[in-house]
Length: 487
Ligand SMILES: *[C@@H]1O[C@H](CO)[C@@H](O)[C@H](O)[C@H]1NC(C)=O
Ligand SMILES: *[C@@H]1O[C@H](CO)[C@@H](O)[C@H](O)[C@H]1NC(C)=O
Image (tube, rainbow, N blue to C red; front, side, top):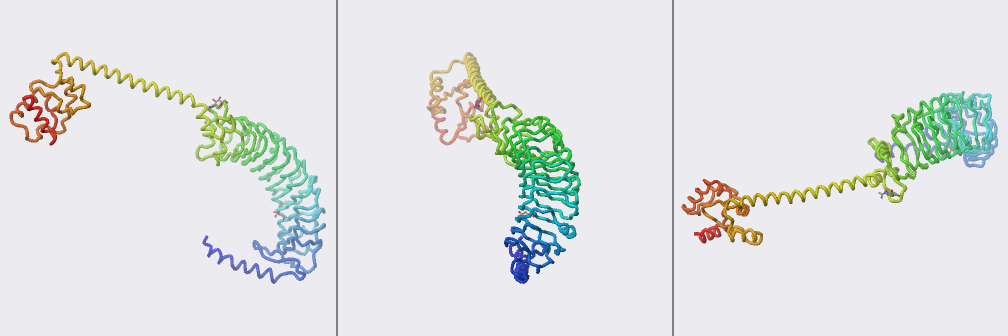
């Protein structure tokens, strides 16, 4: 869009925001009121508050109380009946949610990130919020039915807590849960739990070493799982999910795959295996059950290109054939052995394996060259034979003719050709004679009638025409001279 047009659209919004900010400053000058994303914000963040004044703009739709010193929920929150966003991140809360939140039916986002919670317990109240941010607390215990009353919860962030396990039924009643972030916790294995609705599961940066074949079995809608930055060494055979599309195993310690690894992931489309320990080139058979695979990320593995088989080329082709599954072909680079370091798989393959093919082709070249030489030698023998036969029948050429043959490269051929009037030239003579470019009749009439007669006679012997030099201006004299000499 044109910048000018953009300014015309933005200017009123900016002016409005400024006016709002100045006019609606709360009486004590603590909080700011402004409009953002269509919501009226009441923002008291970063003020060192531990309680709120009474005179507040209760019409606010977003109450921002981030980075203060609240140890409990300020009671005034109850009066913000139109609240959609409540941000209490960066405080020192550790209590259960106050039940009046149940009555703020418009509340969609509750941000409790960076507080002091060490557990999350069951609550009688039924909350309406869709997003709950509990990241950066110290939660190590979640009661089994803690999320039983948040029917609309769709996004739950529990990253950077101290969870090492969760109970299987913990989310089974959170029937709208779509995205669950469990990254940066203390899990040593992928927790098994049930959810009919969960689509995105994030478990990166835990210390996960174990993933079991049925770890994802009870997640019936799972589309994406992020297991990056863990310590997995292998993916279990037949890891099963009927729905999973994106699998992120980047920055683990996985070193091998088998034909069964992805055999029970029929909808796998995106596979991230960057920064693992793969050395040996894969087989295309690893992906025979994954017809929808469209992207594979492989950067940062140390491929060993020693002892290459044809698998390499097939896999290379499988991954790079248009539409390419690899964004960055630099991902398919050999690391060892040193003589192929930095070469692509394909180049290394050609260098290592087609080395003998190159050798074979050089043999072929040699054979062809030898063939050509033999051919030349044979041809020259045959020619000599024909020449010899020709020499037996006609009288042997005169001394002069032989001279002509020997010196033909140095001297002007035309003057050296002996013209014997009554006999056809020998084969050698014929070879030495210039070609006639146009018909004899078109020759200029410089020759006298006598010569014409002679030539006609010769033509009747059907050789003369073809070998008679076409006289050019410079040649005429020399031909004449030769003829004169002879005559
Ligand atoms: C909660 O607040 C933190 C810190 O202010 C912020 O980084 C995070 O994005 C917020 N979470 C949500 C869901 O808005
Ligand atoms: C590279 O070195 C390996 C031994 O380390 C050898 O087998 C291979 O033939 C070499 N490849 C090339 C292309 O020189």
